[in-house]
Amino acid sequence: MRRSLVVTSAVDAPSKSISPARALVCRGCGAEFPLAAQHACYECFGPLEVAYDAAALASVTREQIEAGPQNIWRYAALLPTGQDPATRVTLDPGLTPLVSATALAAEVGLRAPLWVKDDSANPTHSFKDRVVSVALTAARELGFTRFACASTGNLANSVAAHAARAGVPSIVFIPGDLEQGKVITTAVYGGELVAIDGSYDDVNRLCGELVETDEFEDTAFVNVNVRPFYAEGSKTLGYEVAEQLGWRIPAQVVVPMASGELLTKIDKAFSELVEIGLVEAPEGGWTVFGAQSAGCNPIATALHNGTDQIIPVKPTGIAKSLNIGDPAAGSYAIEAVTRTGGWMDYADDDEIRDAIQLLARTTGVFAETAGGVTVAVLKKLVASGKLDPDKETVVYNTGEGLKTLDAVAGQVGPTHRIKPSLRGARDAGLLG
Image (cartoon, rainbow, N blue to C red; front, side):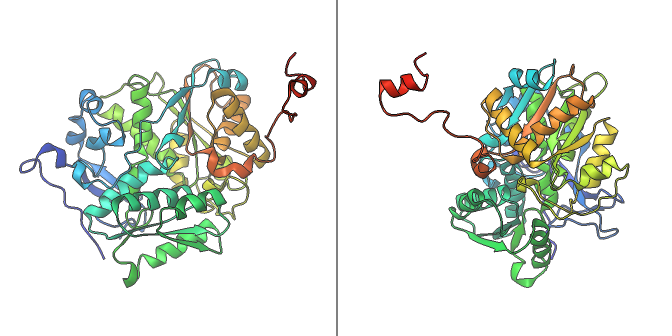
């Protein structure tokens, strides 16, 4: 089944309902298709992404964006859907803090400014609210009546919450060994939650089969049949950083990788901003770095081996939100990193735990395990000389530490235990 997304023309509609998107284009062979519920090329089976009308993007101004709402929809003129507020399926995520990380910079050996883009401040406490808002807005316009996803946790939270807000049924599929915090924060919204005895890749494979059945023909899987729209939501993380820096692109960014798509879309956002004249590229361009867990590092391993051929792995380790053993956008992430002169690295579980605490201690940001991966890899990149310590850098924290408490539960706790008396406090050295 193909559902086409009708794009209202500029001639007969108010400006708020005009989408700049013009087609879906294959990232492999370049074939173009109508804007529809389609994620793979009919010619070569390559992945599709949204292509835009260059003139429509070029008409967007800083003033137009700055006058917009205090969420991702301030960038609606750069997104494929949601130009009319009445059509949006959204929790209004975005404009999350860009935290100055001076103490963290000193700890890891950076001399230039370091920033943490903290997306744990989104409504369901991860960056997934961005991609889900865009995907489900497109899904509603395409006529779908149920929302779904395959998820490592954060996406399940977001789809269930969006569906609850919109009053639409949801069904989300997760690996059976997911962190309990992410299970509870999905189930609480009241939709169907299906735990599968297998890895995320098993879950994703099943969802790819379900979407082809008659029983699921009215179901939008955000990361399957409406994936091209879903992926575009990640661009807002690039747009926001540039705007929050005073319309400036940072020289270096470090991005966690699961499928690899987040990294590619942040890079795409920077490119679009330069192409349409909203910002100037930094001298020498920007450099993109990728971060993975040692328990699931097929993209970084391929780069280290000098190839873009991704060999799937069976994920292990505590960074479950990054545990995609067969990453769909891995080769494109490698292309972006290589093109910009960056690198990728990975961190083991102990390094991840230490980095979670380091980030919290120096910035007040409590990250989930994916954020620990990113900070641990930042340290490695500085130590190895891959990342320039004299260039402004932004690292992305994509989720909230309260969802993955088990990762550090055995390492932190009370520093003292005393009787409720002055003598108890004095004996513990609290009174000098």
